[in-house]
Image 1 (spheres, one colour):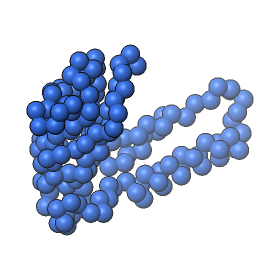
Image 2 (tube, rainbow, N blue to C red):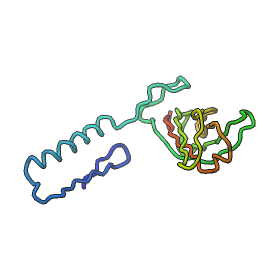
Image 3 (spheres, one colour):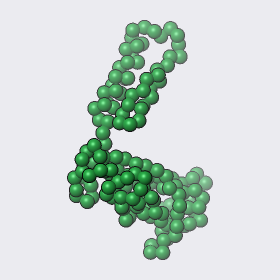
Image 4 (cartoon, rainbow, N blue to C red):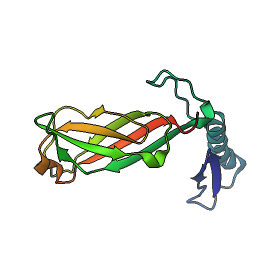
Length: 155
């Protein structure tokens, strides 16, 4: 068992053989080559690069970070008929400005599908709002907003 570190998180790689007769030099070369390529890939591009933020400001590259989660507290929107919304608290991510947010809706197998996608509005360093088309009774069947946010945690 080998662990390669990429940033903060170790990436475990398990080397195993189903046959005890595979201990030839070619076998070890076949195992080591992917391991070395993985190590090269992880060490050469381990950082997160953010090309442009919507506020137009530049931030130090070592401060780039990504945060993700799942949220399922839906409410009926009074401002947008036929839409549901949720406010997602991302304060634990410690962004210093509004991050780039990507989100998708995870709908259980037994629930009916929605039309359209997820609209992200009112992005802040500590929260954002997500809107979807649908009915609260459908959302209560287990709709989950799966989100990821990329931004900076220092200036």
